Length: 301
Image 1 (cartoon, one colour):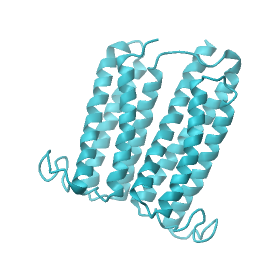
Image 2 (cartoon, rainbow, N blue to C red):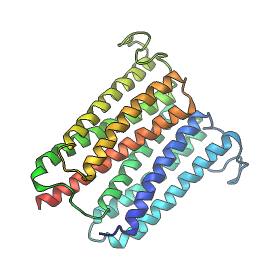
Image 3 (cartoon, rainbow, N blue to C red):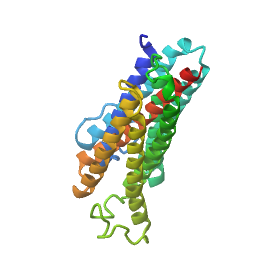
Image 4 (cartoon, rainbow, N blue to C red):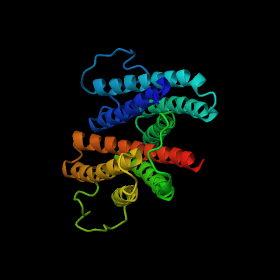
């Protein structure tokens, strides 16, 4: 079945969101978050001189604005096509609202000079929108069943583990935002140990936050490995199996990037890639869950 126009636009919006999250991480890693002291303009203009930190910060704003337009166009094009599926219309409208709220929080981070709670909420909303647009991409994709009916029970198990993995990844990503915005990224200067111990003295809030982030990262990796193991029994060529295997490989890479972020003293490249892979993992597991849910409904009916 041929892909619809709005599916292609939702897919583009998904990749655009991943790029925006990566760019946002670069903005923070380069210390460019307040390079433009005003909002929505930058030094009173929409066309500032794109140099230094202004380049990264204003580029981030422009890419974010383009995402709002892109998603609105996808919603508009898909409105008539999805008249028999009002849920897609509703969630598309929710997505637009979420983007607008996200933009306001982006402005507040600048106006209020990067308060930890606002900055973390800004990141959390970005991951929430990524989840929503990924679901819309999956459910509007051409329908096809790549899982045999005798594997229905296995598919259900994969779906449940996928949901758990996606929830854990979302929580881990938000916690990572807390670590980043509270300056706790290097509170444990060694890795994989923390102050030379497997379990450091959990007295300071920053140490608790950082150590919990590391611990949850291992739990996420275990869930992704279990997800890949469970999906391995599905037949070759299954998209669900492919996404599960991909997520497991990315999970290993993500842990390595976490180590490199500490070793490199939060260098721009590993830290920014760490955010990108986290977002990719969330999108990958969300897409897997959405596909397995849809295929399970097809097989059951």
